[in-house]
Structures are given as structure tokens and as C-alpha cells.
Length: 92
Image 1 (tube, one colour):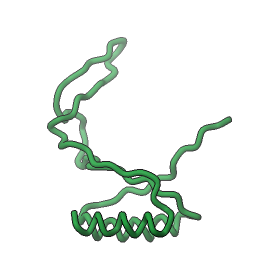
Image 2: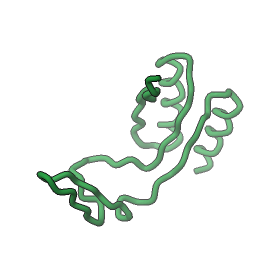
Image 3: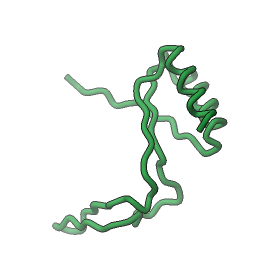
């Protein structure tokens, strides 16, 4: 976490950091699933997935290359894969 804290300070200093937060373990999850006409709610991590999201960091960069540069640093800090996606802006 020391590496993550250091990187977050660097992101804030560079003016790209918007928001971040961690998630509790997948065991604390509740899943809502659409089945036919019903919505089924189950406890626990019962979605079919190999990987699960442990947290989220939102940054604002000039372009994808800049975002990927930060993602490389983040992957090194947390030692897990990092998924980069553009944020969907509202359509006015």
C-alpha cells in the first residue's frame, strides 16, 4: 500500500487524480441477476468471472497514451492487472 499511496500523491501532484477507492473482498458482495422476468439477489461472489475488481481510480488525461502511462505505474504499484477504460460522459 505504500507504493499505491506514493503513486496517488504523484497523480494528485500531476493534476490527473479525480477519485479512488478500494472495495471489500468479493466475499462481501451481493449479486443482483436478471433471470427471466425476475430479479434474483444472492449473497457472495457468484458471478462467473476469473478476475474481480478490487478498487477504482478515476483520472483525467489528455489521451489514451497518457492514461496508459499512469496505468503502467499503477500495475507496478499494486502488482495486479489494471484495466483502462474511458469514462462515459453524459449526453446533454
